[in-house]
Structure formats: structure tokens, C-alpha cells
Length: 506
Ligand SMILES: *[C@@H]1O[C@H](CO)[C@@H](O)[C@H](O)[C@H]1NC(C)=O
Ligand SMILES: *[C@@H]1O[C@H](CO)[C@@H](O)[C@H](O)[C@H]1NC(C)=O
Ligand SMILES: *[C@@H]1O[C@H](CO)[C@@H](O)[C@H](O)[C@H]1NC(C)=O
Ligand SMILES: *[C@@H]1O[C@H](CO)[C@@H](O)[C@H](O)[C@H]1NC(C)=O
Ligand SMILES: *[C@@H]1O[C@H](CO)[C@@H](O)[C@H](O)[C@H]1NC(C)=O
Ligand SMILES: *[C@@H]1O[C@H](CO)[C@@H](O)[C@H](O)[C@H]1NC(C)=O
Ligand SMILES: *[C@@H]1O[C@H](CO)[C@@H](O)[C@H](O)[C@H]1NC(C)=O
Image 1 (cartoon, rainbow, N blue to C red):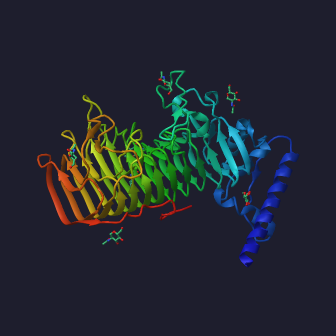
Image 2: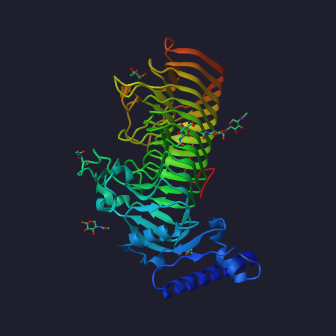
Image 3: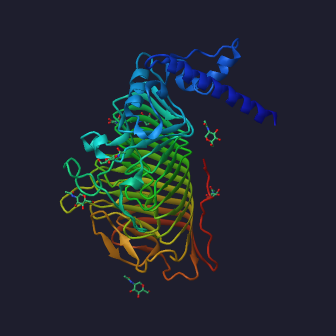
């Protein structure tokens, strides 16, 4: 009771200070940033005013309120210039905190600078423009918010960045919407030309924390050649019928930590990829995922190595594919551990990649004249799942999978009752053999060496029309070891995970 009362008083004081502060700002002609003083015990009001923001400043820098720079926060007039001036001004000297108070802000691409915190307050939303003219000419820089070649940048505050994906829909379709494609200038070709939401390119010491990323028109959070990235407490929502709205794409980036996130999107949720350089040290933990594609997907861009990746304590709900490695180019994937994961996978529609596989590994050359690297030392430990398809582990004559280990894995297979899928197939897309008609099996293995299954249980629903527990091609598989592998049936419908299931909910 007393605690609630104190919180309310604190909030009131903070709000009053904000109002006074805004008022003070508007008395001045033109923008002005304010030096933040370190809290002192002798001025109680001052301490409380600084409390919400001071920790983000690390004791240095300015607070730049975007309203002082002329932002109107109507959601209809563009606030691009005000927001950009606040960012640029705040980045001078020691850097500082760009404060975005509650309100709606429509903007063209914003460019972050080094040493700033973009603090988007609760009830503040930054909307990306739906018009191509509001983005840079180069497709590679189409983001609502872009940090290029900067360091020490944080986006936080509890507010929202919204890509307005629905404004890019040409035709709604419950399977997959048809979207606008900005391909007329020729800088981007094909049907995937839409802006991403947040981009970090050639940058270091990045943190995105406690913000809501809503309706990206294309990929949501993308890092390219960065080092030291933290994504924490971020909630991502992308419409289930909007294509390519990936959750987090980590590309050519080292030392990334993704923790306590909630990702609910149509396309791949967490997608490590390599195009211009390798990817080392990615940890994803304590997060909740639902997607109409893969919850975790390596590739398919895989031109450089992926090494030392950890996926821990994840809850994956009703996804089209669970844990997936899709190697198609010259890079290699090694030292990956998936542990303590609860998942359910189901079929949706073949227009989305995935076929309800809980665990899926493929390594094959993208095309007849291209090379492919190798996959080795991949562990799946303490995994419990319910799925409408089996595990698929498939190397190729060009790339033999090595040292794949499933340990303490329990999978329950149920009939596909919630989609129109009637035929089962092995899915080698993209490239390779494409879709190949093939009945499902509990665990399918081809082109692999040193594969071990320890304490693996497969449970079969009695109404399943497929029931081959274990299938492998002896001429392409060497040294399989099975220890305590159990197969059993059950009669009742197995409960699927629901929206409420989860180790992390924010
Ligand atoms: C945000 O809006 C909610 C609901 O109107 C309100 O309870 C909350 O105090 C607001 N928060 C801020 C920081 O304005
Ligand atoms: C986008 O462009 C169209 C056509 O040029 C214009 O009517 C519309 O107002 C623009 N929308 C925004 C949000 O700027
Ligand atoms: C541009 O995008 C449209 C819509 O997706 C597509 O039909 C068309 O083929 C694309 N054109 C080019 C040149 O990529
Ligand atoms: C990541 O680390 C690798 C190995 O040290 C290095 O080659 C690569 O340049 C690093 N990438 C970045 C973006 O720092
Ligand atoms: C990966 O992490 C390890 C352990 O923290 C560290 O020693 C190594 O330098 C990191 N690799 C890169 C490329 O940063
Ligand atoms: C096996 O996995 C289950 C479910 O994740 C877990 O509860 C159990 O502790 C694990 N057993 C061991 C020996 O780690
Ligand atoms: C799948 O199984 C059914 C029933 O056992 C069988 O008739 C059919 O030939 C199989 N299909 C393939 C592609 O193996």
C-alpha cells in the first residue's frame, strides 16, 4: 500500500518536473539541451527528477527533449527534422539522451549518432513513413532508424517503433499478403523491396532494451558487421500474414546477446546470417517465440563461418519450424548448443518455408555450380517438443554433417489437423532438391557421420498416419550411436503450447 503511494507520488513529481521542464524549454527561442546534474542528497526534488533518466546517461551528457526541437507529436505531420536535430545536438560533446515524450511521431529515416540514448517514453510511438521518398536512395539503407558507423548507442524507454506494415499491403490474403515492392528505381529488385525497422551497420556497443517493435514492413531489427550488441526485454510483433517480417537478423556480427525477448512474427524470428564476414559468439536466452516460419534459422545466406552460438531456455510456440540450420554457401557452422528448449511446431501453408520440423539441418550447395561449407559439433540438450513432423538431419554428398548430438530429447508427434497439408515432403529449399515427396519419420538422417542420440524419446499419437521412428540411409551415414532411445504411443490429443506458455513473458 505504502509502496504504491510512494510510487504514485514519485510519478507525480516526475510528471510535474517534465511539464516544468518542457515549459522552461519552450520559453527559450530555439532548441537547447540541458546538462544533467548528478543526483545530490541535499535537493530531494532534483534527485527524483533525474532518477528515471540519469542511469542511462552514465553520469555524463545532456537531455534533449524532442519537443524543444519543434516536434509536434501529432502522428500526421512529419517530425523528422525535429527528431534529427535533437539527435545531432545531443551527440555533441559527451553525448546524451534524446527524450521522446508520449505522443505519435511520424518520420523519414532517422540517423543515430555515437554516444546517445534514444529514450522513447512509454506511450510514445515513432512511426516510419510508408513512402519511398522518405528513405535514402540506396536500398541497403532503408531503415526507419539507422545507426551507421557509430558506437555506444542505446534505444530504450518502454515506447514503440512502428513500421506501419499494413500500409504496404496491396492485397490481404489469410495465407500470405501481397505487398508493395519499391523496385521501380532499380536499386532493389524483385518483390522484397520494403524498408526495415531498426538497422545497425558497422557499429559497436549497441543496446536495444525494453522497447516494442511493431509491424515492421520488412525485417525488424538488423545488425550488419557490428560488435557487442545487446537486445534485452524487446517485444516484437509482426503480422502473421505479412511476408519477410523477420524478428532479429544478426548478420556478420560478433558478440551478441539476446535475452528476455518476445517475438511474434510471420517470418523467421531469430536469423543469424553471414554475407560479408563471419559471425562469432551469439547467445539467445530466456525468450518466447512464435512464427509462421522458423523460430531460429541459420542462413540461408551463409558465405562465412558461424562459430560459438548458444540458444538457451527458449519457448517456441506453434511455429512452422523450430530450430533450423540452412547452410547453402561456402561458410561453415560449428560449436552450436541448443539447450533447455520447449517447443511446438505445426504446419501452416507451403507458401511459408517450414514443414513443422522441430529440428531441421540441411547442408547442400545453393546451385549446381556453387560450393557449400560444413556443419559440425551441434548439440541439442534437454529439448521437449510436440510436433506434426519429425526431425530432419540432412547433409549432402558435398557436405557431410559431423558430430550431431541429441541428448535428453523428448518429442511427441501428433497428426496435422490444423492446416490443409495432405502430402508430406522433405523440404530442401532454397535450391538443392526443392520439395521431395517423402513420408515423415521420427528422426531422418542422411549424409552424416558421428551422430549420437542419448536418452531420446519419441511418443506417437495413435491416430498418426506415419510411424517410422528412425530412418537413415546406411550408405551415407557413418557411426550412428543410439543409447536409451525409447518409442511409445499415446492415445489422447497431446496439449499444444498456448499463447500463455512460456519461460519469458514481458
Ligand atoms: C501511458 O498510458 C497509460 C494508459 O493511458 C497510463 O496509465 C500511463 O501512465 C502512461 N505512461 C506514461 C509514461 O505516460
Ligand atoms: C505518401 O505519398 C502520397 C502520394 O505522394 C501522399 O498522398 C501521402 O500523403 C504520403 N504519405 C505520407 C505519410 O507522407
Ligand atoms: C516489382 O515488384 C512487383 C510486385 O511485387 C513484381 O510483380 C515485379 O515483378 C517486380 N519488378 C521487378 C523489376 O523486380
Ligand atoms: C568478428 O570476429 C572475426 C574473428 O576475429 C573477425 O574476422 C571479424 O572481422 C569480426 N567482425 C566484426 C564485425 O568485428
Ligand atoms: C568470443 O568470445 C570469447 C569468450 O568471451 C572471446 O574470447 C573471443 O574473443 C570472442 N570472439 C570474438 C571474435 O570476438
Ligand atoms: C531432461 O530434460 C528435461 C526437460 O527439459 C528436464 O526437466 C530434465 O531435468 C533433463 N534431465 C537431465 C538429466 O538433465
Ligand atoms: C507413404 O506411406 C504410404 C502408406 O504407408 C504408402 O502407400 C506410400 O507409398 C508412401 N509414400 C512414399 C512417398 O513413400
